[in-house]
Amino acid sequence: KQMILSLKDIINESLVDYYESDLLKWILKWPGQVVSVSSIMNWTSEASEAIEKQSLKSFMGKCNEQLAQIVSLMQGGLSARAELNTRNLIILSVHARNVIERLLSSGVFSIKDFNWKSQLRYYHGDGNVFVEMVTTRIQYGYEYIGNSPRLVMTPLTERCYRTLMGALKIHLGGAPEGPAGSGKTETCKDLAKAVAKQCVVFNCSDGIDYHAWACFDEFNRIDLDVLSVVAQQIHTIQNAISSNLTTFNFEGADLTLNKSCSIFITMNPSYGTRKTIPDNLKLLFRPVAMMLPDISMIAEVTLYAMGFQEARSLAKKVIDAYKLCSEQLSYQPHYDFGMRAVKSTLIASRKLRTSNPEDNEDLLVLQGLIEVNLAKFIHEDVDLFKGILRDLFPQEFKDSLTDKYSVKSKLMDFIKKACVSSQLQPTPEFLSKTYQLYSSMLISHGIMIIGDTMSLD
Image (cartoon, rainbow, N blue to C red; front, top):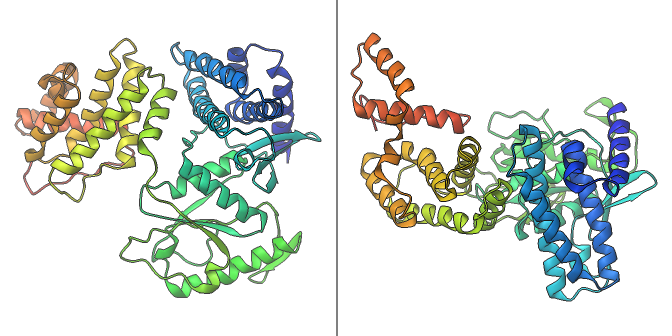
């Protein structure tokens, strides 16, 4: 309760300070969550006024000017907290600018126009923040979610938001369904961040028991007998919410009900172990189809938020690199050229930019592609991968970049000593794979080593 009251007071104070302080100082002064919600609230207010006064064109100029100011912050030396805060604000500001651009091109002159009503908007009234989308209006949750990364908003994300917000209004759950990497779980989590609600995700499998309820990931992998029990439990909770109860009986226990709670499920139709969802369970959720997202747009906005000035051309090169890899390289079960691989490359590029701020941006992204991908390719595909990079980065690519381990002389000295003490031969191939393992550990949370017995690649 004190957390909610504290966050509410801080947001109210930041709203007043927004019009009294310099924008850049204001961004660095307040916590990340507060900056995000307050900036969108002010954008909603100013955009509504611009629509009514038919001055969207001048407001568009203001949005571009503010965005340029925020991006300039990334050029300076920021702390890790301030950098994440600024990066999130850039992602939100780019989407806000894009919305105004669409409204301008659509000729919107009324705040009742669907093109405006269908956007996620924040309003302040009676000391509280309310979030609206289409006809849904819910109160901001005021739960502390910290300064966590936000999702790049694409048309697919907006469509999913509209469906999930519509489900919340009629006290139903949401059921995004689509292939792996389409953003089902991340969209649910990001909507929870947008309305300041904690989102707990359970990864469903054959071994999950029916006592767990929250956000079920890969829901259609649960056994049918468990699904039937879950359907009854969810129905009990939704009935209690619809009846405006404060307490209800759940599986023989009297529980206190928070009416703002909700249940979402995600489903992947391509899993071999998938189950057919019973009809009585389908009625409790609003489905939304999730196809592959606009990866190019996500990469561009993410690079822009990381401070890369040539974000558009660099994003195109990254996407083209993975497209060519998927077409020209051999098929291996551990190869991944989708959204997750792109995200890993962007993270690696950001880390390289932080440690080498003066380096050429094309070179940083090229090194990011090499560090993320080279280690996983079998020997026959390495030369093809080098050829793809040489075509995309003709001025920056050098063969020495793929042998970067050689410059890590201090690390190599210790590896060679470890080899000698373990009676192993420090061959160039062994040293290369050791450095690639080291690089992978800096980027990924988990490492999987694949190969035949006594093999190096």
